[in-house]
Image 1 (cartoon, helix red, strand yellow):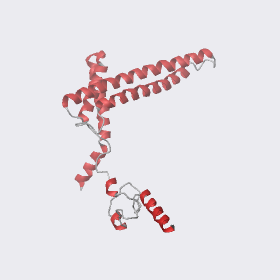
Image 2 (tube, rainbow, N blue to C red):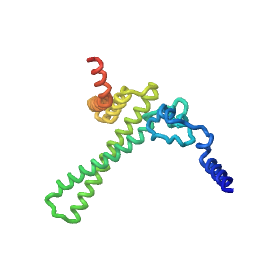
Image 3 (cartoon, rainbow, N blue to C red):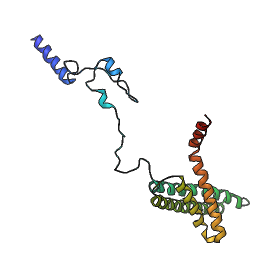
Image 4 (tube, helix red, strand yellow):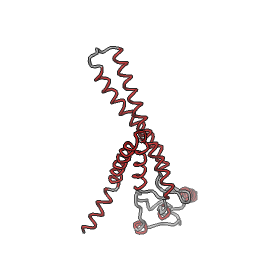
Length: 210
């Protein structure tokens, strides 16, 4: 009876753990040592799992056919416009607070002074949010159009979109205003492109020096 109970208990434990210790496929320490487990904790040799099935040789996400792994200009446009609006609102609010305190410094702290400062803060915040948001909208629109037209995404699109944005934004100032806006947009986007490619350029110079 005791032997039968022991056998049934052993078979129950064997069924519970998948037969890892009773006739199931086992892996020695040498076998497990040869399996690359990059980014994973070492597996126990008593687990009834082949570690080779846990290695991910493919990408984590499944992308549609022809889709890019990075976000394009259209996807980034919403973040760019929203970020510029919030940045402009914050900067304008601080500038309005500075101007309000400067213009009302001769007044005593009272309700009229507080109202005047608050009006200046809201006015400047809305003005800067509208300005930066409009620039971001024009820049994103030009960037998407140029990307779709050329069929490529590179720094040339960035510089061209910035130049056209400055020209259109200052188009109400005549030819001189268009020229100034284009030059300003060209300089800003060129500096941005240079900043993005600084590490690549530095690595190229180092390889050429060797």
